[in-house]
Amino acid sequence: MFSLGIDGGGSTLRIGIYGESLKCIYLLELSETANPSVLGFAQAEDLLKSTLQKTLDEAGIASSTVHYVGAGMAGAAQNPEWLNAILKQSFPDAQVTVAPDYEIALIGAHGERYGVLVLSGTGSAACGINASGDSAHAGGWGYLLDDGGSGYWLGLEMLRSATRVADGCMEETALYQQTFAHLKISSPDELISWTYNPERDNREISQMAPLVLACAAAGDKEAYRIVEEGAEQLYQLYLSVVKRLDFTNPPVMFAGGLLSSDTILRHLLMQKLNLEKVPTPKYSPVEGAALMANISKDIQPTS
Image 1 (cartoon, rainbow, N blue to C red):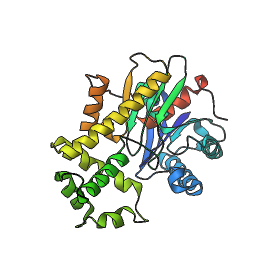
Image 2: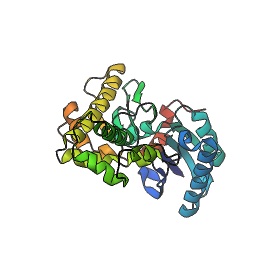
Image 3: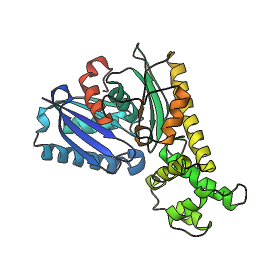
């Protein structure tokens, strides 16, 4: 009897098969998103189904031996029935539980359905679950609406900063030249064609975040301003969740590539949260999905 966890983030798709005590039997990771808001529902469904089958085949496990399936996917929070139907087709005998990607990250990080999670990766969000089982989240609006403090947001602010310098509205710093070098362009006018290229993937903009973070860590004033503002936006998401759940000093965990590694963004957010030690998650989000499936008797199931 196995459990299967699915973590469909903004940039990667991970599927893990687990035995007792969350012992990993097999883990497959793809460097692409299955977000239906990005791919469209038909393409996202095809990718998910083919990846599920590939995982089972490579693990040498029959779908009938999977009794619990937990999944969290970016872009599926508003369409849980869509995701649930796909998983039920692939695993008709399994108990299926679906949730937003940030909820499986919370459950994995804390090892239970309790606490607060702040996430910053390709996108950003905060979520929490209190002792009564009530949940709340803030952020997670996607790159077109907000995602403040995310990798995409940092990259976009870097581009916006370059336009302000080019217009003479702001003093030039090292970040300006770093932007041109990274994009392999030589004039400000090329920013338009690069950014509005119809083939431009939002992940290409989010992949600029490490450059902003590196410049900020090196003392670039404009890069530091951007990162500090990003940390403040993440902090406001945290405060919103805490207020709505009537929390007092709840346990806090981080998720997403920009907070899971040693970055200046994480350092600034820890200062705002008065955290002396770096939060250390108990499990990864994909393990959190499998754990969610196993404790789903305590969760309202998705029908």
